Length: 472
Image (tube, rainbow, N blue to C red; front, side, top):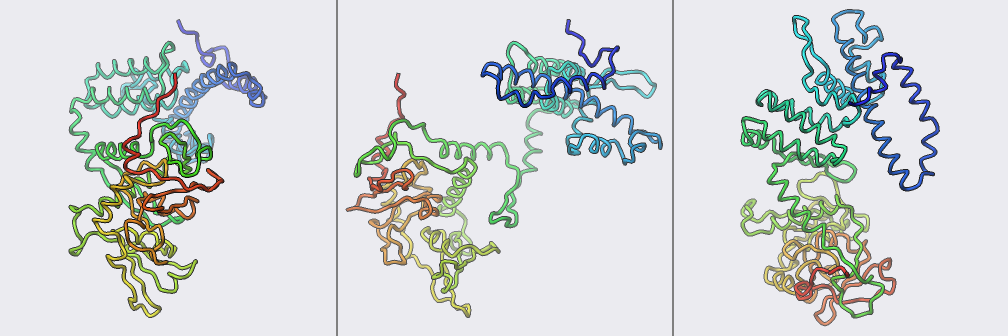
């Protein structure tokens, strides 16, 4: 039989108990850093258990304040404290958001006894969750997760099965022998919710499909926010792309600075990538969009393939601080972007004089044609920067010697680069050259201070690579 929680001791004032508990914790914060490893692990577990007890009390207190404020009378609790309702009173008492306050109130309503119109007391809607909150074995986040699922399917589920599901989920979430993480409980809640819904999965999927959407917001701090909701299959397809290109095989072995000049880049070399996971996902999505724009079966606009137009004045093109504009985007961008993105066939650069007359228009001669692209792809096999996994079909062609400086649009002057490495080549510190038809790269000084050029990864070396084998 479980021990009676200290806050239920009838001989003790609840406020005194809370004050005593707070006093007992005085000075503990400063002592945590001095704990040994084993002690800090045990301490963390014990603090979390204490936090669950406090969370249960927070829910109970919020519900009580709201119940005493939900009265059509001037003497209700919120009115006596000069507040419109219980929500405002709780916001001022707790200093937390209204969303947090509402979540606590909802959870309390679902876990406290109810009363019929006749005054008869009825059991709580979710008694198992309420009991677990009361004894401090169920966390607030997990309790809310289970409660929301049960409420969502309650009007379509068999009541007996619903009660059994609640008891089982709470038991799984509070199992002291085999503790489950929040993500593990969430997976169980999702599965149980689908099994309880008598309408089945299809109506839910149809309803979800109606909510799909994608919106590009106005420019803010130099970037455009995007927001929306995608269907599970679209999310799964995107996640597969992200996983494939942002999580390459773990590499063991040498550092670039430990190798000799002229030695090819190895598949086991560690080449750091300072991009965050979110930045990598952005760059992968950008590459996928560009690939779709180049595809032969992509619908045309005005009889031509979708082409991004970059507008730039002649004086801006020559100025290091010049600006350009991208068709469909109102905010100016650096003119240097006009140089970088003009290497891809999905972009065309238009140069104006001060009067607005077109004085130069990017032509196909400026771009690598289809046959040249296929040849370069067959040679490089993907982005030539060591460690990058972006495939050839997603890459752009980069002029090793810039076209504006006389560099020819020829296979001996073009290499494959992914969008990010292409657009950040100068700032990244990577160097690229073609030596007698062989693409060579030089790592940034912070990776290899010697500045050695070495043969870049190509289609042949990529095919020969094998996953590294851990010793032992």
